[in-house]
Image (cartoon, helix red, strand yellow):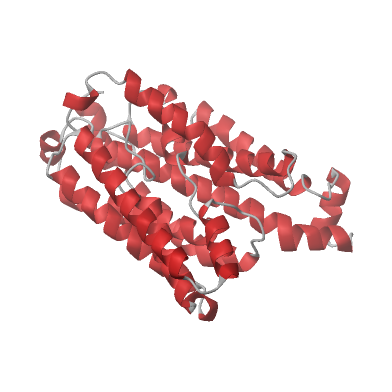
Length: 343
């Protein structure tokens, strides 16, 4: 990547082959998500349900499958996009919202609202509380990033934030007088798209779109910032503004995702790493593929939990953690100079 390339990064461009391939994969997963479940639907019944020709299929689709599919893809896209953004901002391939404690903080905000019962009166407050808590966590991370702390400090700070949020959630669960509320909170924290409705879609969609707009507005800046902050400033990039806008976009995306699906980790770590080899080392170009890859990962995970034989449905967050945690460990072990490198 050269200075000229960074300066002349086009505002608009045609989709790359990998983006088209990922988009086709997401569409296929969306179709499969509508068809697969306890009551399987053929393509014929799927079409009849969408057009109103089959009343039973229409109920299954509109009340169960469609909201679940939309949320799984939307949340996955937001998490993948957030992971690519924080990695571009920190120039650190180990950075990820879950690793930095953002989802745990968002979950704490949501659990606090659930515990007080405020969410029953206004569901939007659940999303607002999760976004606010995620914003506080990202604010601390931004402070550390701009203070030029090393990678180890960032990881330890993320672990500390996540541990503190987890301890606070454990305390709330321990003092909760309602055992049914405790059970709901515990299962919700594992991450799932089960029993979601179009109300949840309506709550999350505006925030997810806002998050995407905020992060994509920084796309050209990420390309310049990959060359260093001083070079980016020489190209007319307001580094402080980009940092704050990125942090706000991640907080909105992760917070709204946690509010409707619970904590789903490691998607923001896996997706950028899977697509980076096809993005020519340009952080700006990883955004769209990472969002599509994140949507594909959570969509596939949501389909997988329906197919695994069990007495109860396995949570999506469990599947993503099983895949993501070993990958994170592998990245730590193989990253050269991790404990001496700067973020």
